[in-house]
Amino acid sequence: MHKMEKVCMSAWELPKVLEERLKEKYGDDWEKYVKAKAINEEELEEQVKAKAKEQQKTQREKTLNGFLKKVGLKKRDMLQSTMLFDGVKEADVLFQAERKIGDWIFSSAVFFFALALIEAIIIICLLPLKEKVPYLVTFSNATQNFAIVQRADKSIRANQALVRQLVASYVNNRENISNIKEQNEIAHETIRLQSAFEVWDFFEKLVSYEHSIYTNINLTRKISIINIALISKTQANIEISAQLFNKEKLESEKRYRIIMTFEFEPIEIDTKSVPLNPTGFIVTGYDVTEIAILKDLDEKNKVKDDGVKSRIIHTEKKDSHMSQYKDIKEQ
Image 1 (cartoon, rainbow, N blue to C red):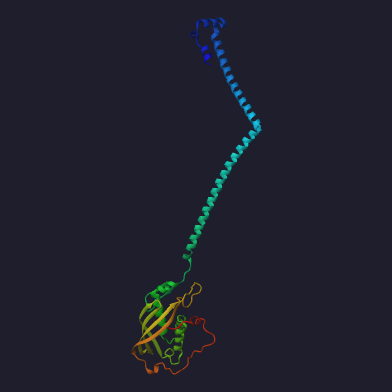
Image 2 (cartoon, rainbow, N blue to C red):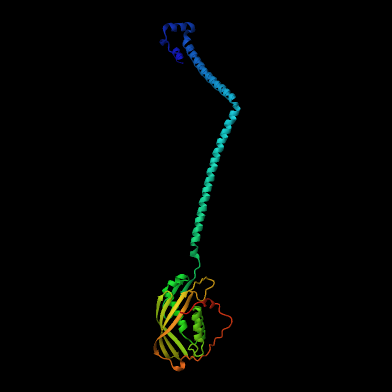
């Protein structure tokens, strides 16, 4: 290439002898001839390079074919192997994509399962908030200007206000005597439900005698609770003032001290069936002591112990409520 450029130099750069020879051989157009020849030589050089590359490629193919013959393969098999490798590579890419999608789906499933499990646990924990729980409501009366709202469970034993209310209610029902039959029956039924067997048995015998003040239609007994002292969780001391009236005329007035022992039985309460003694309050001991006589009763109205039998006739059938108190003794 560099040689041809040297040939194509302008005439003044060439030696005089060479210029004269070229003129003699080619005439005045010697410069065009030199340039055309240089171009042809350049094309020839490019063709030589291309042929050299082709020879190198042919040589490489011969070398490759010789190697394939030695290993027992053909070029076609190699091409198929290459295509198979490309297919395997594409399949591996697809497999990896599918595996990533599967991992994502599995992770999502685990997440939603854990979320559902947490929601289920929260719902189970919150279920007691929607549970129907029975409550006891003690309304105020003429002497007590308050009402007690208490959940019907074991916590009622720790509520001193409720315990005082139960003690006062039991004493009022037992010691007050009215000539109204319906009121007596309700009070006596309440006493029976809240008394141990021996306590109720003693009270039943007391009101059943012919000359008992409980059966004297001329007398009405009214009491006033002076004081209630809770000695312990199962014992109370009560002081009362008892008055006997005969047609609204005061016949007698005395003071008594009552020592009461009690307990609470476990009772299950639901909203469908409420027992008559919802607190489970049971009096296990009831001892009355006279401490003062403010006005004594006339002899004609006093209880006479003349050996008259009880007017209550017991039958073979026993009250199922009493069977649970057979082993409880009055204190």
